[in-house]
Image (cartoon, rainbow, N blue to C red):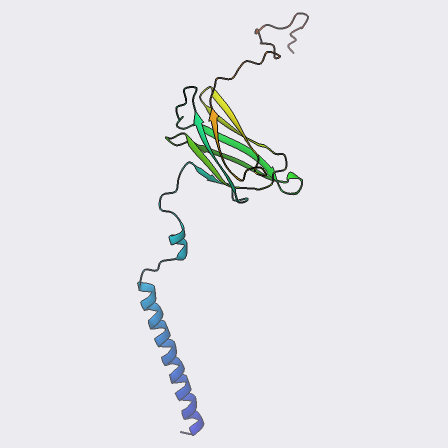
Length: 171
């Protein structure tokens, strides 16, 4: 055999040996459980009363109370935010309160298109509101007191009858 052929076989053999050892090391690493950095960053029990808007650094913590000052469990708190150039970006966020009557919104934009934002809380027939302006307070705490809505005096109540002078036509 010529020396060129021997060198070629030697390099092929060494290449195959290197490839086999790399595959063996890789299969040993695959058998070990791997911890990813994402698993460490995610909390094990996230708070269900926290809503992340993911749009900025601001946050607001709301406490929903009834007329007697007691916390209201499972009240729905909703907000509609417009932000960015021309208000083209929109967020509609809702979260239910916990047993302490608390709801928290994080990741809110620092600059709103039409401030202030109005947080509306509802539970059964009770409603309440809180206003929030991130330019004045980026991290805020507010209370919302739920009350029965007052009937609007300017809006006439319907009696169920048609106004005089109207005709009912059927085709």
